Image (cartoon, rainbow, N blue to C red; front, side, top):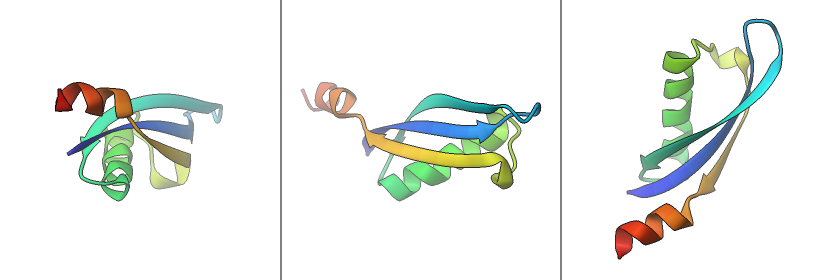
Length: 68
């Protein structure tokens, strides 16, 4: 498992563009995108059309702490 930071950009219920960070553990970047979409649907009640962008960044610091 690897640690990732996801930056989720979406339109909220008032059609305002918002970005929010998320952290997660996943096997790959593709898995992290799927997890991010699931969390967006659960936490923010977003539909797939509301999501503008998902940017996935490997979290090297968290990964380094785990390997020590």
